[in-house]
Amino acid sequence: AAPLVLVPEVLPPDWLASVHAAADVGAFELRDDLDAVLGLELETRRRVVGLLTLLTRPVDAALLDAFPELRVVSNMAVGFDNVDVPACTARSIRVGNTPGVLTDATADLAMALLLSAARNLPAASLDAREGRWQTWSPTGWLGLELRGATLGVVGLGKIGLAVAQRARAFGMDILYTRRSDAPAPPELGATRVELDALLARADVVSLHVPLRPDTRHLIDAAALGRMKPSALLVNTARGDVVDQVALQAALEAGQIAGAALDVTSPEPLPPEHPLYQTPGCFIVPHIGSATRATRRRMAELACANLLAGVRGEALPHAVNGPI
Ligand code: GLV
Ligand code: GLV
Image 1 (cartoon, rainbow, N blue to C red):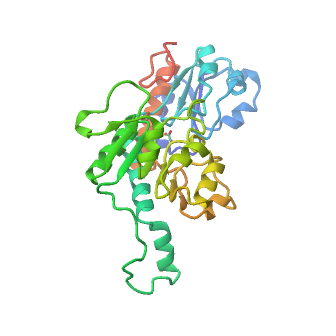
Image 2: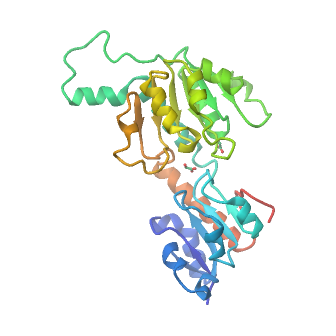
Image 3: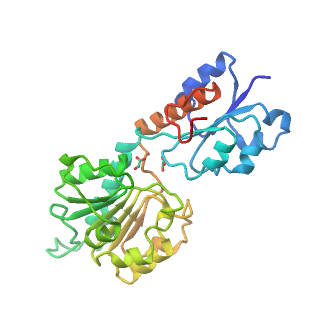
């Protein structure tokens, strides 16, 4: 029987054209229901050589051990905190991700959240719809002017840099932290600082670090306590970078003014969660990369990683390696 690759059934077939074409020539068979295949006998699971995964799929040692011939895990996301990479490496399984193709879309969404928080769009929109727009009020719905305000970019990687460039166009001053020693491009005119100084000085703090053990709850009660009472927090990274209980307390106590979250812990955040009712907070459902063009490019790149991996070739974008 031909080797199998498994892809999530929610992906439109035309996004997977390259895998379909390869499957057509008999290289391997394509199936789209990992959970169904997981339930099958070892003989079938031994045929599985590649997994295309979404960020909602934890890939742990137990899952890997269900597929003893697995060669590649291709995660359709830039983040790969859902994948136990050391467990993959220990089994000589290549892991791929999709950086680059989602940089602009995610930076656009971060900017949309920044603008929405700065100008109170969620509350103002609700006020208009619910009859609280009585007159043009000179002092109503006052927000933060971006020109001259300071943006703190926590994690100046590809996405953080793209956000900083956008914020520059709005006249913001940029502070940043970054793990790598390489300086930001000089034309950005951005200033590198320690995280504590960034938190103390920024009018808006935008998070762009991956979720790793050292970034889990990076923004905790102490970090929130360093921020200005007028400051806004934007998170398009991962929910667990923020201590959500501490965030709720900080918003309720007026320690910071607002938070705009594209990511939460858990996801989805259930509708009865108190954070939805917390003043100054608004939440969108992890849509950072959700443009038609970007999601297609992410799928295509995930397919390229998958096909390279099943063929034993280096991945276009590998997270581990060399394998
Ligand atoms: C989305 O959150 C991604 O990591 O691509
Ligand atoms: C980080 O921001 C990245 O683009 O990987």
